[in-house]
Length: 125
Image (tube, rainbow, N blue to C red; front, side, top):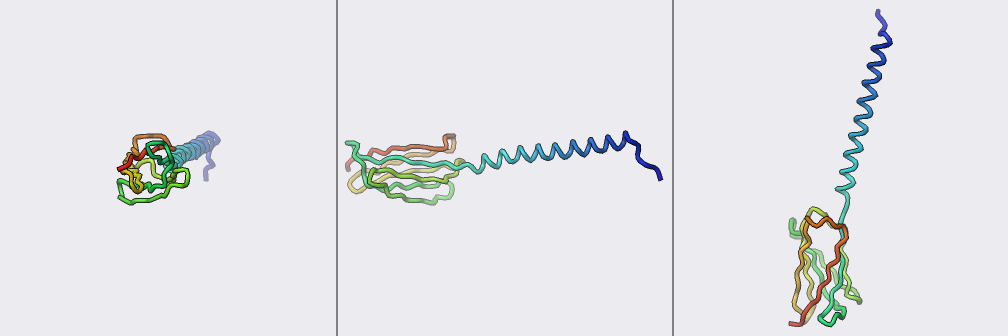
């Protein structure tokens, strides 16, 4: 039986070390993309009338891919908030209140901001 010489052993150890480190490096690259995918966006804003008085209104968020709709009633200050939104999907925001015309805003997947603010100024019908 022949024992491996020192040179072959060193080459084998170096190869194993290179493979292990490149696998770990590759894993780090994929982790970076996983973190990026895990990011979500939020949309918040304010609903007022023409005199900039806060309105109790309903704000609906429509997912343009699945057509699911989420509704939010504004608080006493006219504020609304949606969170956990997929940044790769387009959305449509609609605000309406009794006696006021509804307004629609688009939330584009091409907008790379993670926190969006949309104010609605509703006009009397």
